[in-house]
Length: 148
Image (cartoon, rainbow, N blue to C red; front, side):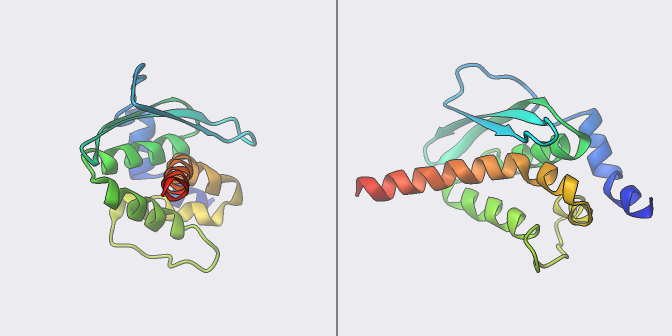
């Protein structure tokens, strides 16, 4: 019970009640699906990329408190971010959830999700939107590599 309290606290509860950048945007330059068939969480990520940076990002859909809060943090962190910094941000976040990963961070928003490591069923919730963006970035890199 104490571990669950550490997970469902502060930022996660706040962003579940009032998610950031939570809007459907038809016509966005990029639409990504983030879906967890195990628990049913399903979001669309909407990105507009321009001049080598994320011009605008939002998400919409449904999911648990952890997945919704995590998607909110992702959207907040990538607003206006240069594309060359995007992959590093996503990789850094996801690296904290790998087996044997560092379990400390100076980023309070990232730290809010670290207790999910103790709940295998919630781990995917914490990383869902981030993994969808990572997959998109990897596909883009593969396409660029194949084109050169």
